[in-house]
Image (tube, rainbow, N blue to C red):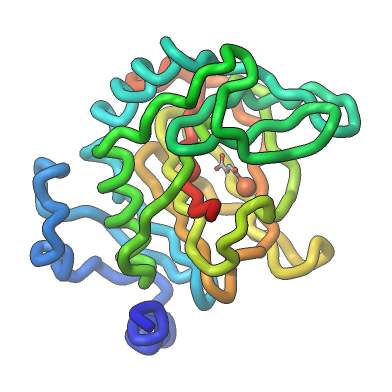
Length: 245
Ligand code: SIN
Ligand code: FE2
């Protein structure tokens, strides 16, 4: 319901301009303590009905999110998963939350335990949850309560081919994708694999939210270019939040 209510408002914005300053509506949303300034996004760009790019939304929270990530990787190390077809993914992954996304020769699944250790995945930090919920709300999806956060780490050359996220039971709640560290080119397609693909440059702190009518849109990540970033060195980190159940 809240998504539909917001959608009308967003549609107006899209007609007037593809990029608009963010209104301070979040100041009443109870999420401000996470941030040390009052502008959560520098701009918002409506990609589709149900999909929005929030530039700079996670910039202020970035260092704290990465500190949490370092705690998570102590317990659940990054690893390069094997696809069902037998390829080793170039992106290194780990997870936090009730379940974690994993891949092996038998397929893709959400697993309550880390197959490498047999232990549950580290809990999702409150700072992760709050940032994801605030971004989802800005995208028009109120009360977002993700079960899982897949953490992707890209080194130079690492990429993610065009795909849909379709291993989740909830077909409406958004994917919230937070970019940290080196910039990249995000590939944003359509409902069909053959649809035209936009190339969107994502910087550290940019957040993409897609759900509702855009939930199964194809997306991917172009090969990472060499570089150095003060927060992440020679890597890009991406947090993707999912409502699995
Ligand atoms: C994903 O599609 O799971 C990750 C996208 C990204 O790294 O930006
Ligand atoms: Fe994805």
